[in-house]
Each structure stands twice: as C-alpha cells, then as structure tokens.
Amino acid sequence: MAVTGADIAAIIEEMAPLELAEPWDNPGWQLGDPGAPVRRILLCLDVNEAVCREALERDVQLIVTHHPLFFKEFKQIRMDRPGGVLVTGLIRAGVSVYAAHTNLDRCRGGVNDFLARRLGLQDIQVLTPGKEQYLKLVVFVPLGHVDAVRSAIGAAGAGWIGNYSDCTFGVEGTGTFRPLEGTNPYIGRQGRLEQVREVRLETIVPRRLVERVVRAMLEAHPYEEVAYDLYPLANQVTPSIGLGRIGMLLKALTLEEFVAFVKEELELPAVRWGGEKGRPVKRVALCGGSGGELWPRALALNADVFVTGDVGYHTARDMLAAGLAFVDAGHFGTERVILPALQEYLLRTCREKGLAVECLLSDAEEDPYFFS
Image 1 (cartoon, one colour):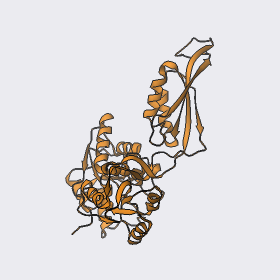
Image 2: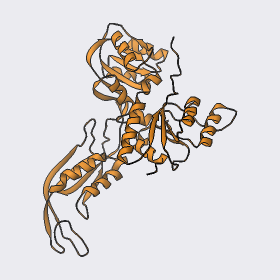
Image 3: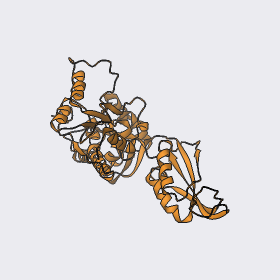
Image 4: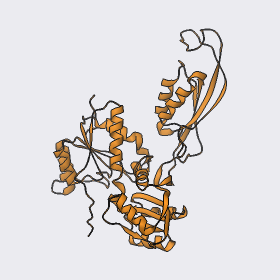
C-alpha cells in the first residue's frame, strides 16, 4: 500500500493534535506535496544544511522536524541567502517537511513525558496543565454488547480524565422501541413494541475527537439505529496535557549527585546548574527546550530543582533568590529524547495500519554548542 506524507502527518496528529500547539507556533505541513509518496522518513530537531544533505544522501522523501522550518514570517525566498538555498534545494529534490513542535511538547507521550521518564521520575504530573473543551457522550447499549462498545470508544480516545483512561459510567434500565416497515431490527419484530434491558453508558470526549469516537461507537454497536446524545460541557476538563512535568525520584540525591545523573542519562558533556551542592533533591520539575519562564510554577508545586534549557542570567538569579535549584541541560539535550520515541511510535503505528515505510533518525544533527 502506497504511503503518502498526509498518511504520516495524520499518524503524528493522532498523538500530537495541532490544536494543542501554542498560538504563536507554526506546526504542521511546512513544505512539499502531502499527497506525494513516501518510502523513507528522517526525524530531526532542526532542518539545517547538514540534515538536508543527509536527507538527499539517504534517499528520504519526508523530513519530520520538531522545530518548524518556517517559524518567523518568511517574505522572500532568495538563492543568495542561506534560507532560500535550503528551501529551493528541498523543493528541487522533492523532499517534503512536516513539523510537530509545541503540540508534541504538550501532548500525552510527547517531549516532556519522555524527558520525565528518561530521568526516572515517578508519579508524573503536568507542570502547567492545558484546558480542552469536552462533550459528554451518552449511548444506550444492550447488555451483551456493553464491553465491546466501551472498549471501542476508549480506544478512539474517549474517557480520559487526567492520567486515568477508560473512564465511563453505566446504569441499567429498560429501553423501548417499535420497528416499523422497512427496518431490519437486531432485536424484535416489525410492528411490535419491544422492551430491552439496556445500559446507559456515558463518558467524556474531547471535541476534536468526537467524529472518530462516534464512528467507533457506531461500528461496535449492534443496533441498526443507535440512540446516543452529545452534551456540551460548561466546565473545561484539564487533561494530562500541557507544558512541563513534575514528579519524584525513586530516592533522594544531593543536587551535585543529581546534576551528574542528568548528564549521564541525557548523555551530555556538560550542563549549567545552580544551587547548594549538598541540598537534597527528590521532587523534580522539568520542561524540555526553553522553559525558563515556568520556574514560578515549579516553585509553587514545591519542586526541589527545575530542569530545562536556555536559562537566562536574570532567570537564574531569580530562581536562586527564591530558593529553587536549577539544571540547564540545554535546548538540544532536553528535546532530543523524543526522537527515538517518535521513531518507535511511527514504525509501530505504520505496521498496525499496513503502511510500509522506513523511519530514520538523523545522524548529521548535533548540538549547536561546543563545550570545552
């Protein structure tokens, strides 16, 4: 089965919907034809000259990048400037570009979740939770099919509340209906009033997933005509999405020990850090990339240390004055953890969908900083 760029984009957006991105961001399709066939994908954090050369050498049709190729307003494409050379080279080579940025930061199973897991955190929670509009789905199901319908809507994305999945409620009652001429009822006969033991099954559904959940529900439900309702909710549910994470180490370390642990786990030659060397560290807050502005939230949630990248001088001073230790593990160092995880997700999902595609990690990409 031929795979297109649009197929890959749809798979990524199942995990990291574009609606989760920050308003200032520019994720999604960046360059090329979404309908063009894709045999080989290259994953990277940034689309630069080295990555583009690598894409050509490895016969790649689609680059999936974390940072958008077009981030600031692009008014010109000039061949005498680096940006223009990069773009025109990709177009001539037929290489498309897709970006998953802050939507991949904020989503469940994204950058921050994998950074937290890489650092061995337990009881992981979102540092700055996002809010999403939900609807309540109510459907009436005959007793023998409740489990099948519940499983189908859960697999389609319904029933998530925070870190709890498959959240539903059911109450048993009696449903009545009279099949009329032209019907083909699953239960009962035409013209006769039927009474059936049914379960009123209800759950919550993100607005962005309503169509998919309803389709899954209808496919799993035995009735020819399914009775269901969708109610808009006045309250915005705060799910397990948002920027940053906070959790607990299995055992307390001194700050100096924790710094060495971060370097080892993230395979970094050096980090910048601040705080008293011997202070105990157990509760860790983090944000992949450039998350220095989130430190007040980390402090409010009683974090002992905040791990992020791109910490500015005055931000460092403010954190130390407030009594919060920090580890600046770099923008590159705190985000690259997502690439192997994204590779595994894409390969697994493509296999499940019967899509034959290779997914490669960039070998050419390096941290722009040298440490000496």
